Length: 305
Image (cartoon, rainbow, N blue to C red):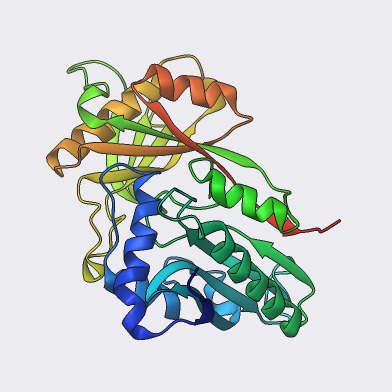
């Protein structure tokens, strides 16, 4: 067996690291991959995390190498302890993501590489002397966050290493835009399209001019300068129905108008996210043409013993 080496990431690892990350992404979201530029940028800064990214004081990427191949990798963050840092993140360390291919007949040493890399991660967190240790699986790709159920090998590694799932679970759903409702001419509420908090907003108004609900869709999941392969993909950033309009079918009108806009944008797949505890919201989406893509477990904390 060739010796395993755990060491800091080098720039000439970039292609192998990207390939390893994309293998994990492909098991979660169909037709999505990230570029080398995306991966390198994420190691330096996470522009999509406008709140938490400025709190990071140190970033370290480690890889396990064997026979010249990068067989496992992890990205770690240390959050600052200053008062402006959110309380739960203050003086925290985190394994932002950890990737390795599951063992196979032609990769019998895969678990060993992962174990040695995890030992190095825990040693670094210990040297940082952080207050709390978190972990997750947020590689830089749309809809990949928390720890997706599609990565049982990483779930098992985290649990063997003393991490416990302490947060919630979210259901990620996907629909072909062609399968979503279409607007019915001459019926339903009046709609207005504006810029929303999380994308393009469609607001439904009743005859009295009162807003009864809105939906926001984000068609910019792939940042153009990062050259990710996520064309044709969008997600629902917000979906809100006034309680007085529950049960009126307003959600189908909202989805229909959003879908019509997405068709004009050449978007063919739409993602949605719901808490696993919110059965009515999940049933609504399933009834509108969505299917469950995966479940992801958010919030992992190191609690050995």
